[in-house]
Every structure is written in structure tokens, then in C-alpha cells.
Amino acid sequence: MARTRTVVALAAAAAAIALTASLGSWQLRRADEKLALQAAWDRAELAAPLPVAGSDLAGVAQRLPLRVQLRGRFLFAHEVWLDNRQMDGEAGLLLLTPLRLADGAVVLVNRGFARRDPRDRARLPAVARPDGEVAVEGLAVAQPSRVLQLGENAPGGSGPMVWQNLDFDAFERASGLAVARWVVQQTDGADDGLRRNWPRLVAGVDKHHGYALQWYSLAALIATLTAFFGLRALRRRPLGKRTDD
Image 1 (cartoon, rainbow, N blue to C red):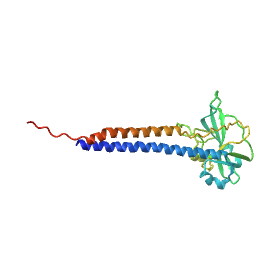
Image 2 (cartoon, rainbow, N blue to C red):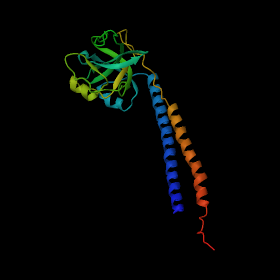
Image 3 (cartoon, rainbow, N blue to C red):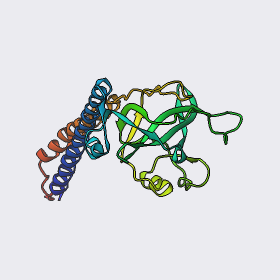
Image 4 (cartoon, helix red, strand yellow):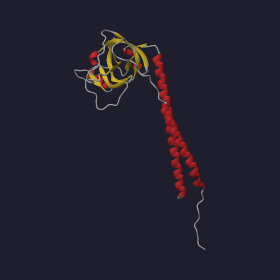
């Protein structure tokens, strides 16, 4: 019976070693994925902008992030403010405005950040809204940065839409526009009251390397303790029954 318990304990230890080692390997794979994403982001920021038309929307979605150039007209009646954002250490909002291209396709443009009025949070920032056809250059990304959201976005109405996060489906229902499933983070533009000091993407792989070291260390500790106690127990000879003379 004692030998059976020892074998079961050794099997449990082996499973624990395999689990902790696999978790360490998973952390290293996550680090590699983030490094690859950062490299792709850096290449996109340095690349020449790719002119994009409505027929290119699906192709762009497969190549994010991608530096692009669009030409069209802003649809200011359907713009969305994203609340609870920060830039340069200040609290404010991001302004998303749909851009209708010449062929009718619509792409959301993250035009930039505006500081919130600290005396009146209900007052939206004053920004310039260019008329006519414009050229927009920026980085096509999956979506703007997200924040912790409490509750649902307010439905579109007669006034400006102020949301916590972008929801493509909700935007299409509120605006009646069909939009591309990606957003242009604008990098060019004149003095229009918006900031575009977009933070550089940082992979943040140090924490994954740290977690991997912890998991591998735990696996090594379990293996050491198993070798010291488990193998000694297996070598121990069972005592025979004691008899009286």
C-alpha cells in the first residue's frame, strides 16, 4: 500500500512538472508573439502610405497594421467621441469621424485627442471640421484603444455620440452607415485643435520572461523535491512483521 501511494505521488509530481513547464513555455510564446507584433507596427510606421479605395478595404483588414492614405469627405453628423482617454498626461476624448471615399465606402478615422474642459465635463471640445474633399494619412489598426466599460454605449440621437469604446455594429445601427472593420489612426493634419501624439506600441515582454522564469523555477523545485523524497521512498525496504520468541 505504501509503495502504491508513493507511485501515485510521483505521478502527480510528474504531472505538476509538465504543467508548470508548459506554462513557462506558453509565456515565452506570448513574448515572441508580442515582439512580432511590435516589429510589424514599427515597419508600418516607417513605410510609405498605401493609397486605399473602397475595393481595398478587405485586403487592408488582412494586413493590419498598415500605413494608408485615403481621400474623401468627412461625415461630421455621425462622429463619435470616445471618453476617458489620456494623452500627454491629460484627460480627454478621442474623436472618431467617418470618411466617405469617392466610391461610397466609409472608413472611421481616429482624428485625434482633445482635452476635456475641467470645469464642465458635459462640454465637448471645440475642433476644426474641414469642408470638402480631404486627404487623410495614418495607420490602419483594428480599433482604437479600449478602456474598462461600465454599461452600454448610449444610443445615437440628435446630439453628439459620446461612448466609452467603439462598437462597429452599434455604430452602424446608430448612423445607418456600413463601415470598414478597422480604423485609421490619423497622423497628418493641420492645426485643428486635436493632438496626434500617439504612444509608441511597446511589446512589454519583460513580464512574460519573468513569469516564464517563475514557472520554470517551480518546475525545477518540484523535480528536485520529487527526486529527493520520492526516489528515497521507492528504495526503502518494507519491514517484515515482528514476532515474539
